[in-house]
Image (cartoon, rainbow, N blue to C red):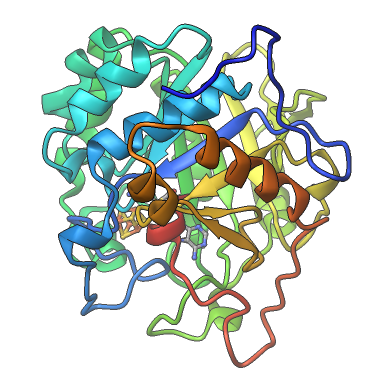
Length: 336
Ligand code: SAM
Ligand code: SF4
């Protein structure tokens, strides 16, 4: 493969931010249809428009060569992709990669948790928006809560620690469950992060009526739990709180309320091989044509990735009052 420099490489954008974290969506398909994420009838991409697993593995290897230290595999639902485990095994054996992590809806985790642990996956984020089976079904349209709960238990049994729940709250749908979800996290030694709904893609409901700010959620939680603000950061958009005497971290991802962009350390790659430089902007570099035009030489790929650093935007610009979504792609394409 292409030339390697013997110096440890780094990716730095034009604002001096070091990019050492990629999130790679390995499929746009999913076994759920969460109302804030997808329409009811989604058309998924034909297979030839989706990166092969070999292309995914090559991308990860090249990014790690360029200085990336953390890779998150996401989707769609990554664990519904056939042979997804092979990719985890490839990535998990790369020298230079410090953290291989996964975001999943948990539906297949009971089956895969032990193999993912064996493949060197370091941590797992599991989405969980409700503990009520009927409500869980309403939000995911088709999901089975019990299966996800078994997946969470499977991750624990496989030896995963600091597993994190991701919860998207929607006003009038599940916003009253924030305390119950935190209590569940405490009872199971999990972390939990509340994500504000983002206007990504066109969905069946009006985003501005379902939107609930994390400030409101925090106030609700503070009336029931002793939350102590923490200075911890992961270079990402989450602010953390702790409950003294417990291991649980409570995070809030608030793209609307806080400007976290100046510390941004990440880029995203869709399952079509588009390198998106910002979740909330449309600036991108198409890596798939380059991957396919240069199957045996990584130089063009490296140059395209470096070009991406030059066009990474300063920050995002979400506005819920706009009639059209600011960003037309769905989270299931870009990866959460
Ligand atoms: N299927 C996996 C899952 O649900 O965890 C991984 C992909 S999913 C797109 C990643 C995360 O994005 C999930 O936690 C989901 O709740 C969140 N998400 C999806 N659409 C969103 C939206 N419009 N606003 C905020 N979060 C969203
Ligand atoms: Fe699927 Fe995850 Fe989107 Fe829900 S949030 S529809 S589980 S990709």
